[in-house]
Each structure stands twice: as structure tokens, then as C-alpha cells.
Length: 113
Length: 111
Image (cartoon, rainbow over all chains, first blue to last red):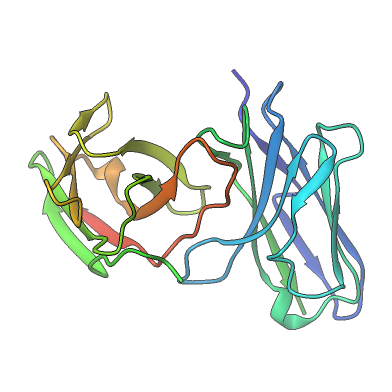
């Protein structure tokens, strides 16, 4: 079946701009996670949703980062006033239930110039 | 911080078994050992997990020491497509929780 998909695959933006990154989880998966991965590092947790609500947003670095999942399926990660340090691969994962194995998408590579 | 320690990199000849070690000396009784791998430009891929018994699936085998302070992931017949970064993670199963990744082991399969 279809896996987790993320769009766009690549995003180049200028410092100060606003960006949205989209994640389509596996159909029926109730839990959705966002991670960020810098070059040479393992993925770093940002936020996770159980259904429509954010169950844990402790990994969001600051208030420029925000994520939504209004209907409990697709999620959007929003970054305001982007900075060069935001450049990374943003990964999304979903699982049938928050207690289950997570399945990752291919990621969105964000480059802030 | 990640609760595991892995070598930074390893080489293995194609067709041979790749044995990837992981130390998790502070593992708690209710924590499982999980392995994921990440092939270049892809998201992490789940491989296997276990609590204290050895586990095997179509991808790999997981050997956990009796004291549970270390484990080894075994890829029985490595191919070039197994070249990836392998992450060993300890995590409480059946609990909603994020994954805390370390830096993993970069495995190079040599032709």
C-alpha cells in the first residue's frame, strides 16, 4: 500500500520567508510525528499528534514553528520568518497508534538562503 | 540524549554477515531495543525490535545479551543495498513516545 508521502521533496526559500511542509500519513494511522534531521545527525523529534490534537510539542525549537492536523489525517508544518539555521530535512512518520512502530516518509529538504 | 552507544562506522564485504553492535547499559526493564536504518536520501526504515529474547524476521536477526546491556543486529547476507546508517534505539513499547535517535553506525558494504 501507499506509504507516508511528503511534499514538496525540496524547498528553497529566502531568509525571513514563511514555508509550509505537508505530510500525508498512511491511511488509518492515528499518530503522526514530525522530526528534523541536520546533516550528519540522527533525526530530532519536533511534535506528535494523536488524532487532531498535538500530544507532545516539546521538540519545537521556538514559536516560529507550528504544526496542524485539522482532520486527523494530513498535517502541515509551518515555519515563520525562516532562518538559515532552519535548513534541514524535515521527516514525517505515522503509526497505527502512538504505541506502534513508526513508518517514515522520504522527507522534505528545506534550504534557507 | 540517546541512551545507546554505537560505532561510528563499519565495513562489511558483500555476501558476508554484517554484525552491528549496540551498547545500552542503562536500559530499563520495560524498554525494548529497536533498530531502524536510513538509506541515503530516504526516511528511516524500521528493521526489528525485541525485549530480551532473540528475534528474527525477513530482514535481520537481533541478539540481545542476557543482561540486556548490549545487542547485535545481524544482516545475514549483506548486499550493496544494505549500505545505510543503522540506528539502535531503546524505547518503551506500547507507550506513546517519540523516538530519540543517536548518530547511528554508517555501514558500508564493499563489493
